[in-house]
View 1 (spheres, rainbow, N blue to C red):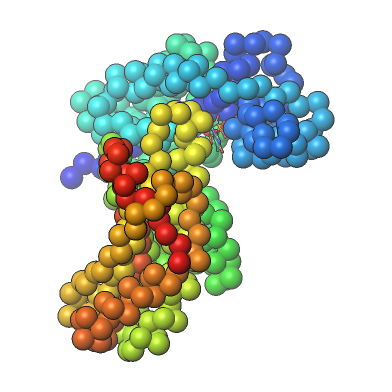
View 2 (cartoon, protein in one colour):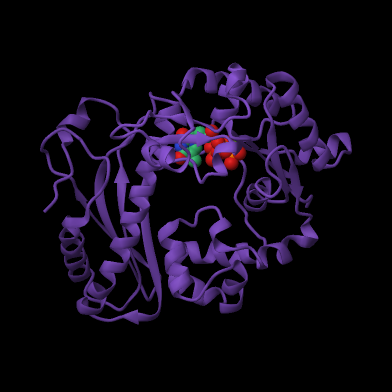
Length: 381
Ligand code: TTP
Ligand code: MG
């Protein structure tokens, strides 16, 4: 099997770079793109001059001006960013059809076939793409090159701005071992906090603990973290399918016996699920700044999953009741009771066996029709 060749391209301070390009007066001065200072203004990004003052994405504009009083804040112009993104994407497709954009300014390319066909190194392809981007748009990009998406994404940050970094396959395990967890895509603030509490700071610490430990503490994600600690990740570059559900689960090294033991795990699962749901909706909100037509799917159902010793999966759902129109943006767990009730009835229904895996989650609704109104908002008990 040929080794995969993946490139991750990420534009340098994208929105800010475009604004500086279109308005030369902004160049060399600390500037940011975002909402003006006031009650709710937040920054989308800042140029490198402003970053020296601790000004960055998602910072409130008020605080940014405190940190850097001469900061110039420019209003975002989504159409212009989309236009530049289209130019960049056109260049990507000159090399491969296997392109996966993560946002307007970053994407993965699987250039395995291209490299093979033209007998060229992926590093050379990355350099060529960056050069073409610059010639076409006058904007700079950084690139990461590796044999999987995880390492390619991490390495595009390694030599930023206007640089690139390659992780050859033989260095992947060593590189990943020393990688700080904060730099691992997918590890959010809360997971990071949890890792630190457990005394885990770099991917190598997870490797040392072993795969069972990782699965016990982080479920499925633990398994993928363990693989990443060896520099392995098998995600394919491809179009992202719409996310249908958000969930989290735990497999137990010792089966849970009785409802009381099951209930003890609810707070952990709820906490994790809440973090995932909030992160999910925040991501959509962020993307909406670039693409106002983006749909934010409401929650349609809550579900619980139990796996018994014989590896059979059992699930039980709760459909949100008809009520007011959807307004859901964030998800509060004052209704954790629903999950508890679901847990009780499922557990009884399947005959109160020993439980090896417990999971909870929500299903999202993509039907953008009047039906939605009918289903109503998720009721909080
Ligand atoms: P990033 O690639 O995260 O940031 P960047 O391109 O500005 O800077 P870097 O050189 O470090 O890559 O995000 C790309 C664009 O997405 C960014 O220019 C603005 C937008 N964005 C937001 O609107 N809100 C956010 O919280 C973030 C992180 C980005
Ligand atoms: Mg970027």
